[in-house]
Image (cartoon, rainbow over all chains, first blue to last red; front, side):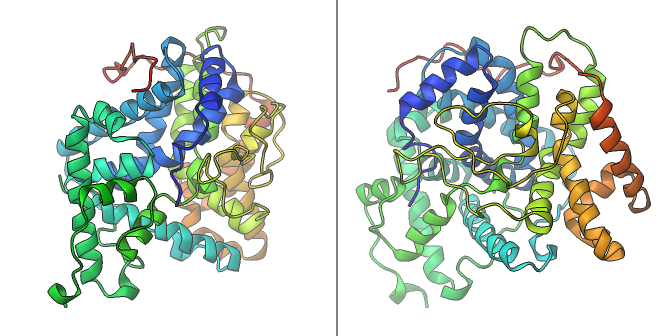
Length: 205
Length: 231
């Protein structure tokens, strides 16, 4: 199993951070590619189908502020996730102030029936369904699970992002996994990941 | 049903191990976590061109001008549209990508970095060491005319995909929800052809819009002074 971000040798990321701070666009591209997939999934857990928009906002801010960032690769990852999280929370606040609109959750079914595309769509759906299922957990648990398992952060770093002690993060993640394990057992095996329990992927906080 | 299928709950240490990528636990849960952290896909990087455009725009050397224009482009290029574009281009037109993008660092810590060459990436920039490109996920022939052209390339890619499909089956093409963003951006299905034509022209001739980022949003989330040391 993969932790998309964590296993990257820190030196690579630290050097990319240093270069990007001085305007190196290729270095910024490296950082984007390293962080974006995990960020997007984490944000999907927080804001559902709006994750891409929120991620774009986050990257806009990261691009704007990176010159004043100080720290290494790990620090940058924590900083970037924190920014993304704040953008997501802002988004949720804005959303609460207006009536919610149901958004279409899937477009894959309508894609051309090219075999390759179909295969990839199924894969993507698997990941999306998995994220959506994690997102049905209470928010503190969902965030703990996503930051640990998907962003590849350790409990201490996740705790800094969430404003919690590492022990609280571990407990939330543990509870989340227990709940997920129970729900998975209660589902028919075939339906386990094929169906999205909450297609919108939105958290019930 | 329920109780008799329930396995003994795993303890906190087992949970930690699962969260770190271990596979010792309820298989369904292991599978769920594996899917949640599966390698990155090209569609997940669809916002790259927009992010790089924002990065360029934030560089101090660029004089602040054309902010309104940039906002329009940003709007057009919401990542949502770009995602669909990536999917459309990847699936319909070119499909030369490898399908699955290696996840940075995933379970091959010493492997090369990932890469999709988006059209935006193709404009004369040099791939950095350590980030070899898996080229050809998206390749629209965009002249390196300007930053705007670079940033708009995703939408151009969507146009290109549409053109490819429309040639064979014009009516069906726009019914495909992959092109919903294009129809929206164009202002209607009947205007897509014009829109794409305009976009192509604009991308080729636009002057470089060099802008500052919008100061509209304060940045309360800026956790400055993050300590350099990982804890």
